[in-house]
Length: 471
Image (cartoon, rainbow, N blue to C red; front, side, top):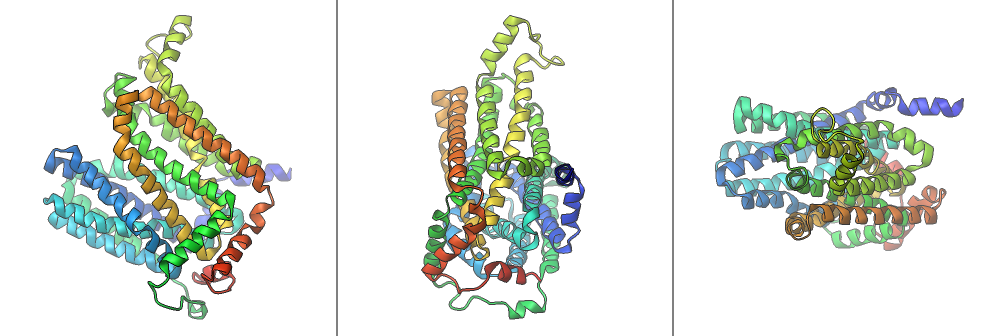
């Protein structure tokens, strides 16, 4: 009976409602939703503006690179500074800088090189914003609800991408043009900046231990100390790899889907949103079931199931043509598929649903592992490092995946990606067995002792200190 009650609580909408009932967490969630929706809408708008100005895909690639490069170049100082500054102040400054960037886009979006320059500043501010949001979650949420909070974070991230790119940008561009999008983006960031004041600490902030010493001093040493501490905990390293792999997969899918539509399905790439719509439905269902699933089998096993599911779905998508031919010969499905969509499209939509569901099982559990195992004083460095790693390893697919696909073909490329994902799943099983169920309880202590040996931080209760910043 108790287990049934636990399952009901994990699946109940009130689990999310209980999180949002906390004014500070609700402010953080709205900050994330507004900031990320505006961010993706503006990036898509800028892609269209640059393409309209130049007519060149080379320039759109340069725009994407101008957004990724600040993360790679500024990763080390940003990671350390996030742990030295109060994160609610970081959110405030990042939002204000992005308001100013929107105003510059508004007045100078007819000049492509100015767009690149302003986008570098916009990207640098976003580089501070997103890790600060993730790092604040465990300071506002009890450990028992971390999986729910991280599930909500990832659901909001996916919703922001969809709302910003698929809904907000087309509607605003048709009704008010690019100028309207830049004004609306600035308004979103203004509201997000205002929400940070609900995170502002009270009198206890005056009593907290603050960073002493030069603000920009010892950055390389602190960064190396966090890497040494991270390497000392194998489960945290694996969680970092999983989050990086997840981010790289999104970019790979975005690049390969138009090619898959053309080469495999012989369908116009404009129909990709419809054909792969089941991916979104599967992801929503996966996020809905994730807290219950993690409680049942454990976070590490959930990630393994997700990676294995992605690998199987990618192989199925790669082999959709011979599968369709086999089904047609056996007479199990009509060549026109379901609803006259065609057998290839029907099978693709069928496999897209578990692909989205499997993908939803990766991010939140891996993120929760890092929240549970990393000391509060290192969260800024660790989550910034994850973002930097994802962007760095995404550069290679961005530059080479087109040529590799031309050489090998889309089906073989999907199989190789599936093989890589499956290897990651097998490694996760091995790491989970080595770590054991009791490892999480003392992981933070081991990482903290490594940090103390390096002399990187003062000897204080880091969890108490981090939470004190927000009380």
